[in-house]
Image (cartoon, rainbow, N blue to C red; front, side, top):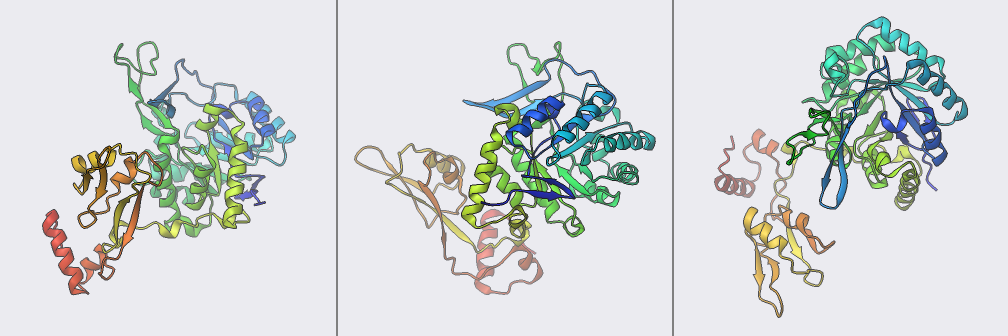
Length: 440
């Protein structure tokens, strides 16, 4: 079987699945239970000066019969005394020496405060410290959390305060609430971070109650922005992970990245690994289904690795990064068309309606003995893939690559030399005319 063990910036664990810093890692009792089920590690819920948390702190986005496609929270850092957390961290690490125990921390922006918390964490025997630069609510209003992660200068400065005294690996947790995730990543590495982790939660308001007109969740009639997490944020997390993995400074540093944001299945885990993650943090899925999901995560990932011939996690890590490209490098001569398998088609007509109303009007309804059969006019199909996405039947619609008869050409090539191949240029001219695009 595939070897799932990892060495993340010197932190070892028997598998890459760690509980993220969040409610599931709030106490020693919880983490003991998680480790009994087989989790490879845990990032302790952020410790610092104890706070007062509110009731009705979680909201959720449900869609149809699907519960908790996303969760929104207005919970702050640990409301338990620092000394209690430190004692339990020490007990957990003593009981589970083979598991990764990383401690998330957040204190006021003073070097002496950070130096103190670092030394306290190290005294517990913890394997690493994660700097929480991502919390978008409550703590950010106090100049902490995302207020640090959104300003590269602050990110570098505080990281340097920690790295200058820390004897254990320092992981910087980045906020997604920023235009360019690469900038704070550079700052963290410049400040001496041993690793990065992302993403923290996305700033959001989850809903408004249409009966009471209150925000969801409502705290005594009031509500506000909170942190958005769960399956719905996975595409955002993957994009930001790929941005770091594709950046020469980050990738060239050799510093690993812990990926999180919507991981709930082994398939999600594999995607994060393929885009460069070295460890995987899970929160919402554990809150939804409990700690036993680790069995499916490990078994599924291991079986998939065996089927693909991967012997260990390092063999997967970053294997898809070379496929990440800027739009200007996409091949404009590539052509794909949709084909509908009439034997699998249930004639629901979702593809016809979607194409006819909102795409390129290239699906016809051919009279049939019972109901009309949707059929693609391939000469008019532009390969937008909308019909493929709305079809409820697996493998009913296939996107088939068609020979274009043209030499490969990209927007970048058109901009640099006009044009290398006459027929390509004529095709681009027709495209420009049809879409009102100027090409210089």
